[in-house]
Image (cartoon, rainbow, N blue to C red):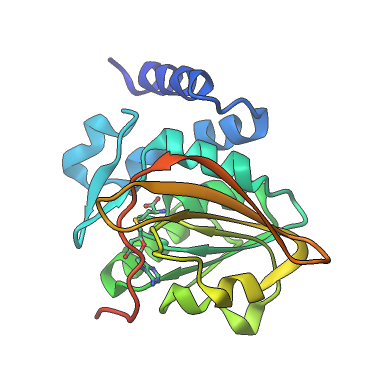
Length: 211
Ligand code: SAH
C-alpha cells in the first residue's frame, strides 16, 4: 500500500477512535510520521501503534497523540510546555496548532535527533532543551497548556505551579506496567479540576538527565 493510502486509513481509524476535531486531524495528516521513526520502521509509520525510537523509548501511538492533542485543545495564542520530546512527533503536531512550544527531554541523543528533525522540517516555533521535565521550565512559565508524554506516579507540583489560570494540563498518571489513566487538569481561579479521560500505557517519567 502506498503511503497516502495508509495515511488515509490511519485518519479514519483516529476518527473512529474519537479524534473528531478537524484541526487536530489536519495537523496529524500534515505531519510526516515517517520522518520521526527509525529507517527500519518507515514502512510501519502510518500503522496505529507505538514504535521504538531507541534508548528504550517509543513514539506514541497516533490515536493517543490525537486524543491527547484534542484534550489539550491548543490554539494559535497558546504557549505550550511539553515534557518528553522523544522523537519530536507530538511536538511537531503541537507546533502546527499553538503559538510556541517549549519541549523538555531528559535523554541527550533523543533531544539531538529531535532538534535536527525540527530544523529539517522547517519547524521554527519550537524551543527544546535537555532537562528533567518534572521540574517544568520555570524561566518560561506560566504556560497556557502543559502536556506530559511519560507516565508520572503523581502529578509533579512544579507543573501545576507553572500552569496559567484558565490553562490545562494533560498527563498520564500511574506506575510503569500498571493501570495508567490519562488526566486533564484545569487550573481555575479557585484551584484545580481533574477529569479522567482514558486508560493508557506510557513509559515512565524518570527524574534526572542522561548523556
Ligand atoms: N512524545 C514522544 C513520546 C516519547 S516517549 C513522541 O511522540 O515521540 C516519552 C519520552 O519522555 C522519552 O523520550 C523519555 O526519555 C522522556 N522522559 C521521561 N522522563 C522524562 C523527564 N523527567 N523529563 C523529560 N523527559 C522525560
